[in-house]
Amino acid sequence: MTTVSSPDRAHDTQGLAVVIGGTGGIGAALVAGLQAQGFEVLSLGRSTHPALDYAEETTVAACAGHVADHLARTGGPLQRLIVATGFLHGATASGQRAEPERSWQHLSADALQHNFLINAIGPALVMRHFLPLLPRQGRCVAAFLSARVGSIGDNALGGWYAYRASKAALNQLVHTSAIELARRNKEALCVALHPGTVDTGLSQPFAKTGLQVRPAEEAASDLLAVIDALPAGSSGQFFDHKGLPVPW
Image 1 (cartoon, one colour):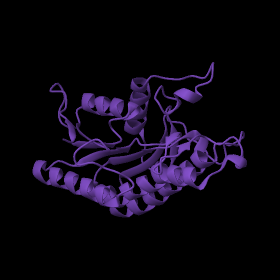
Image 2 (image 1 turned 135 degrees about the vertical axis):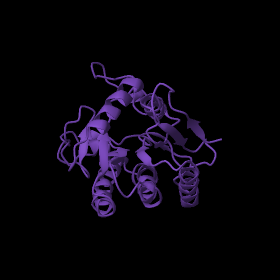
Image 3 (image 1 turned 45 degrees about the vertical axis):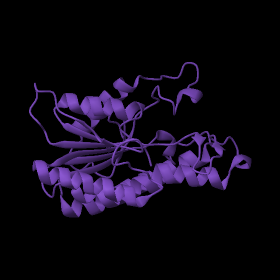
Image 4 (image 1 turned 30 degrees about the horizontal axis):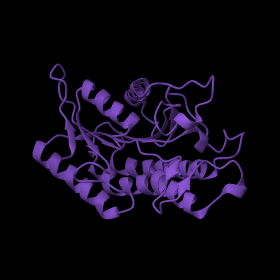
């Protein structure tokens, strides 16, 4: 079944929040944080029903249809859309192993394709099928978890080619979608967010001694605070977990 969390009864329902990748480390923490804020939360991913698999666009469309049906039944608005998926290392769709590259000598088409599928193409399909579900008036937020290493201006170390490039592509997709979204609803916000280094399976192998690694619950709380405080005119921008702008 699709994971649907009801809001805390101490809060008034604020509408629906959808978290894509809501069964992962930071995704699950975002689900819990949104529920505590009073949202009804719907979590979607490869292990939910219906399942959402970036490799099959039909599943993204079906999940969007599922959300649309839910909105029609409840009559409430989709106030938060958060995409918390990401790929840095692990098995690719072909079964090969991908790791962050230290040199151009380590570049492989397979790793590049999988990074772009999860970090850019998948979120782009979410934009296509889910952004039209946001209300046409009033404040609402679509947030896509990016990474500071996707910043071209902040890149002083090199390496990590596929991850950096795919997250940079995501940032461009967010910025472009924000322009189109504003034509539908001037108060709607579409942003990229850097969560910091979070204690999840994605970052654990690369957490250096002395590097600030934060619990997923803390990272989620910070991100939700940034989302809540986004000012008018901030759509299409890239922020870190402190609410500070990140250079493109």
